[in-house]
Length: 536
Image (cartoon, rainbow, N blue to C red; front, side, top):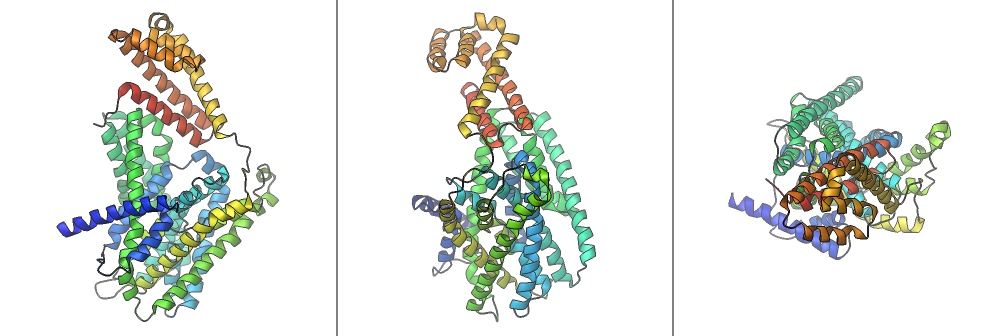
């Protein structure tokens, strides 16, 4: 027990050190961790960590999918739903088919079912890797929205392909017609389970006396319960987590009513997802020697060759698919032509940003070691090794060259979107105007009798007086506790009204979800100045 605990703590410390080093040398940490994981596997004496594949799948996937759903902009997702769907479903199925037939003809003893299994594993790009590489680079908002939306749905579609291929391998039977019907049943009922479960957690958050710590703990628990509930009935746990996450995110303004709760929850989730994303790359490095030893009759060079060929296939298929998806609908529909043309640059960036990552690793590791008590799962180590090569090539090669491509293409904003500072100014004008109206309608007497409230009203109309007048009023009223208490109550009431207004803005789709989220974070910070930080 002590040895396992020490190993886990050592891994966590190693991850932190590697990420800090990656930041120091200015390389996106997913790329650096893949390189480090490869290097770790060659260090003599490094322990080989043996993990239960089912535990790997359960521990990592639900929170990763839930977090992706939570931070997905629903407005952007719906606006670009056509392109996102064609990439998340069409591209995943096409990649799986091409990889299946290519691997069957390329690898001796590789069946078509194993090919679809491999295709389902390597078909979904990773949003974390792409957004980390793109961080700080000037890319169109449309590009980021499409990459994030694609990653949310393609995880679900690829994992369903993986699931059916796994059944085909273990049972030896597969019917396209039956699989198609089962696909819609499993996915649809998974969505139903997710929505029902999300309503239950919604009621718990909203109507029971929770605290910021309890709310944060419940949000961590939610994806696991949604996933396990759906899987218990043999439905898609992935779709349950995604649909539940989207619902909870859309209703977050109703269930998380204090800034303390949101800030506390954000800190918990940022840490959790960071550790999971980083740790899984190191885990594959520690398992790599055992995977190589288990290649059997396949030599290391042959495994590398297969991995490089599959990597080339997934890159080429994505590039060949993305251009027709971007332009053919524009030729067929006048409605689509109303949006500015993506040109050739935006599809190139999206096509080249198809880096594989955590989901592919976790899915590959979830392949069972044994089909039953007597028969080992065929080609398991080779599939995991090829997956590692695909991740290594797409993440390192494409990840390191993507910034260069963006720089050479000199891509600019495609859509007519207001700059961030203008959006923030527009949002703040709406919020300040609402606050002034609230003061005039409900607190007119307090404005004249309470100097703190009077000063707050002035500050809304004059930014220069904000800090000086506020400090002056606080000094004048330092001994007037009733006035201070009344002032705090009024401020909290106004903050609540402003949050409702932000939700109204979100539905109006005038401002981007990112800018509205920034304004909400600022409200949370302002609220903490009054309430203080309460974790329990």
